[in-house]
Amino acid sequence: MLLTNVLYELPLGKGKHFASGAPRWADAIIGGWQITGIFSYQSGEPYTINSGARTANLGHNSSALIVGPNIPGGDLIFVPGVEGPVMYKTGGFITTPLSDPHLNCQNVSGTQTYFCIPPPGQNGSGRNLAQGPHFWNLDAGLTKNFRLTERFKAQLRAEFFNVLNHPNFDNPRNASTGSPTVTSTVFAQTCCVTSSLASSANVNAIGEPMRVLQLGLKINF
Image (cartoon, rainbow, N blue to C red):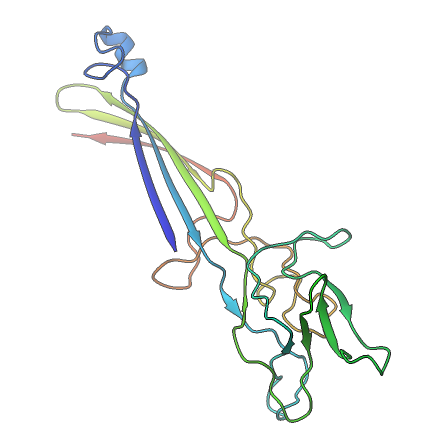
């Protein structure tokens, strides 16, 4: 996870590089401005691609068998005719012909990678071999400081959470329309609810999935 904080005080007004000799009324307008920013980035959450079949035992679905090079994912793709982004572009679950060596598989288009139902008695390639979409978010703030008297100061704040209104999509396991199961008709889809970043301390989401504006006034004395 990458977390970057920025605080920049505009060099305008009394004691600053520009307009340091401005009269008091002008300094009250142009002075005391600050810009803040918090940028967060984290890689996607790992998840398991499931076969949708109980090939190993009757207690649980086995993981998918990966034939060919593993493509962990992490990047979203938009496919014509499919609502929302997907993790993998595929041609659908292969059920015919019976002579196809990749029967009961999903092929990642343009590659030699297949996600398949493993043979009877086998449990697939394992857990958490796929990676969900990357998350990133930018919060920003604009602050104006006022000196009311020698003792009292005021601060007006405008804070923007997810200022760019950037959508972060869940992996197919958590999507409202999508599935990590190769037999599903919505395999690898991540539609349609966006989410906020998870905390660095736990898996609970923090921040906002959409742009939010907050105004505040603080008095210091």
